[in-house]
Length: 487
Image (cartoon, rainbow, N blue to C red; front, top):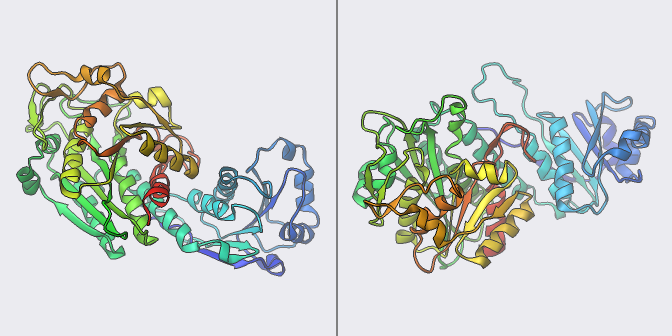
C-alpha cells in the first residue's frame, strides 16, 4: 500500500533552514514580499530568491505556480521551491501551491515554510496528495524511504497533522485500488483488503454468493455469472455518531469489465481495471472516517464482481430478477454497473434505513462526452441534499456538475417483456442510467448518484495526482460528512 509522507507540524525555525535537507519551499506574493523564512533562504543563497521573483517568468506565473532552484549555494537542501502565493490566498490556490511542491518533491523530504499564511493546512494537504507514485507492480524502484513532510508555521496548534494524514491516506488507498491490475485485485483479494480495515475500528462484513442468492440479488449475481471470480458484497460500518440513521455510500466494484457478451473493443480495454472506481472511493472515505474518528454514522457498501464472457455469462435478451422484485431485461451486458448497484442500494435501504444514500460508479461513457474529465456528473432526487454535496465537492476542489432527472428519460427504459430495460439508447445515456437506479430508491430516501467515469482515472495529471487514479470523491464525501452528518 502506498502511504503518504509522515506529516510533522513545527513552529517556524529560520535558523534551522541552512541545514535542512530535501526540498525547502518558501512562499512569496506577486509583489515579491517575503516573510522571515523566505528572507532567511534568500540570504543563505545570496539573493537567489530575489533573482527568481525578479525574473520575467515570475510575472507571468499564476497563483500557486513554483520556480525550482536546484542545489542552492549556502544550503544543504537538494532544491528550493519558490512558490507564488498571496499571504491570504484562498483554499484552492493554497492547495495548488502545495501540489507544485509535491510535484517537485516526489519522495524527497519536504519542508514548507508557511509562517502565518492563511490556509497553510491546505498547502500541506496539496503537497501530500501530489507526492504519490504507484510502484507496487515494479520490480526496480527507488528503495529509499519516503521523506517526511515538515510544515513550519507560526502557531502549530492551527494544523491537525492527524486529520491531514487521514485524508491523504484515504485518497491513497482509493488510488492504489484503482491503479491495481485485475489479476492482482480480484473480487477475493479486494474483499480481503477491505476486511483489513477492521484494524481501524470499522465493522466489516462480507456477503458471499450463497447469501446474495438468498437475499434475491439476481441482478448483481447475473453480472458475475461468466467469471470464475465469486461475486461479493462488502459492508463497512462506522458508527461514530449517536442514534441517528446513517449515511449510506454505495459503490460499483467491477474489478474488470470486458463488457461480457456485449464485448468491448480491444483498444483501451486495459483501462477497465478502473471500473471498480466507485467502490474504491467508498473504501477510501470509510478509511478516512475511521482514522479521524468521525462523529457520524456512515455505512459503506460495495458490490464486487467481474464481467466476463464465459459459458455461463448473462446474454442480451435475458431477464433477471432484482432484490426489489423488479424484472430487468438485459439489452446490453456492458451496462452492468447499474445491475450491481440496484441490488446493493436496495439492500442498504432495507437493512440500514439510511437518512440519505449516495451511489458512485464509473457508469457511462456518456458522462465523459458531456463533462469531459474535469467534472463528475451528479443527479439527485433532493435539491437540498444535492446542494450540500455540490458545496462539499467545491470546498474540496473536486469538480462536480448536476444533471437533470425526469419521467421523459425514465420512459426510455420501458421494456416490452419485463418491468424495465437496463439501457435506454444513446440519447442522454448518463441520465437514463441514473433513472434506472432511481426506481430502486425508496420513497422518502434522499439520494444522489455520482457518475465518476470521467474523473476516476485520467491519462494526464489531475489537479492533485499524477496520471492514473485520481482519488476523486474521497475528500468531497468526507467533507460532506463533516458539514452535514457529524454530530
